[in-house]
Length: 113
Image: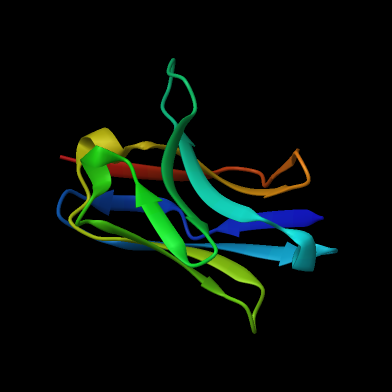
């Protein structure tokens, strides 16, 4: 399984970005998908996840971020609106199957105040 994240960039506070994670390989066996982020000097934390159609969000992104899967295009997406400087981080996509985590490379999101 290979995951390729894209869509990061520099945006002003209040702006929006759409992240995408292209998946290839034996993705049909994936149980769950998620977006994580890691700020400078911080721990990697869950932003949003989706499994069997159910979604879960970190408290500080609820109402601003939306996770979705496009099964036809084999992508995992994260729509982010009303971005805040504290959203600045490297964002990673992850897929989980049979107890194994698969990570994509990160994509940098920088929100200026």
